[in-house]
Amino acid sequence: MKDAGRKASLFPGGTVSEDPRLSASNRALKGIRVIDMSRVLAGPFCGAILGDLGAEVIKVEDAGEGDELRAWPPHKEGESPAFVVNNRNKRGIAVDLKAPEGTEIVRRLAGNADVLIENFRTGTMEKFGLGYESLAAGNPKLVYCSISAFGRTGPRADEAGYESLMQAFSGAMSITGEPDSQPVRCGPSFLDLATGTFCALGIISALFHRAQSGLGQRVDGSLLETAISMLNYQAEGYLLTGNVPKPLGSAHPSLCPYRNYRCRDGRWIFLAGANDRLWKRVAAVLGLSAMAEDPRYATNPDRVKHRAEVDAAVEKAVALFDREPLLQQLEKAGAPAAPVNTMDQVLNDKQILALPIIQRMVHPRLGDIPVVGFPLQFSRLQPVINRSAPLHGEHTDEILSSIGYSVDEITRLQGKQVIR
Image (cartoon, rainbow, N blue to C red):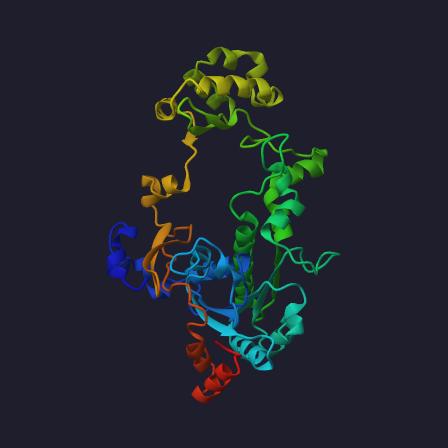
């Protein structure tokens, strides 16, 4: 953060500058240099996580249009929120990789880097002469992270993929949506973001291994493997029992009642009768105590078996209440429930305001803006946003100068449109 004194409210108990967790020596990845050659979401999110933890991250973009994430609406003064949030804590350089001088720039950057992140289609970096084997020959300590759609082996290894395509292919889309309706894309880009998170974990693990062995290594992540991992108990359920899960809307395949219900005022709540004890509490508030004592609905496996009857009864009962009074009664009874918030409601909720997840950064065009930050808190560390997402090619001259390019060389490369 460029203006620590004005961000005191983000850190209870003192200003940013007074918080001992924010000392430069307390940055977990201080001294680690990352070359982020990725575009769109999974790779950039991975780089942002490493930047939050103190790494120096250099984002390498195409000298033409740059990262396509810049074009994602909505825009504010020409800036995409998707680009702004996923490229925080990075400096930016714009390079034409199709030009030999452009690939030489990346080679020199990688020569004294600790990490390189890329998510080009499998084989593209090798065509540029920037594959792992080539770069590791000159820098054996390099941790080289590749992110792909289908992984680097198998019949689909060379295919490109996007979030929604992979939600469809992986089966995730088949269990999302209402029963007997069309498959639905999960709202958040959970495969991209989870892949970026897993890759950050993989990179940090490789750096820890390097500290012991002295050698870097390749780290491979894919949206497909992330999807199977995130399908977790549903995938394991098929592997062990042959059960093919189906979409249940907001409901849970193993719990009942555990879904959204609509109140009399038209607003929605989520009820979590996640076990027999909580079911009895929910039933008492809704006037369904007799049903809770019925042997057909007494245990969770029984309720799952008779899901249609339970849901119908709970749905009818909830429809007799307005949302806020019902939530108050459920809270008093110790029955878990939550309002189904819209984005504006949750981001202005007192609980969110009490947490440091929304931070501030100073953007060269947008000024002092809020930005979604790192979701973990530590007792001795504090991930921070020290730098805004870069403008296209904002730091090209500065970065090239730092790796030995003269002013004349930089001017020549600009004239040839190798750099921006």
